[in-house]
Image (tube, rainbow, N blue to C red; front, top):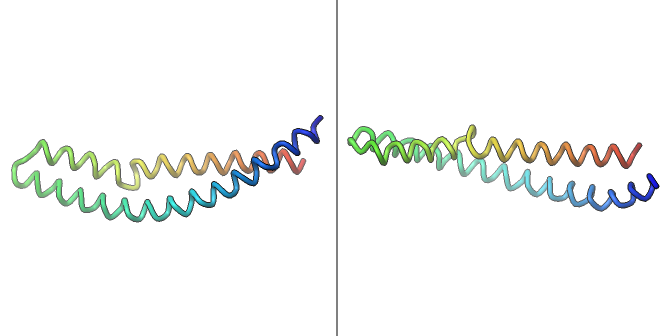
Length: 96
């Protein structure tokens, strides 16, 4: 019975390995682009605060935070790490 489960898990290991590699590649590029966009949005927010438009400045500051490396990219990185952990667990199941 255990050998059947291992045979059923093998395609999932291949799919997880390939999808993890693609996601890491896309994540690296997206994080780099979002870092620049976050910097630009932060500078625009500072400019709006200086000009006295606080509502627009607060909105851009929130957008800059979400696009910064501690916002949405951090959550995406955590999810990619959990996907890698699931892949490692399946590989361990197959090899033992």
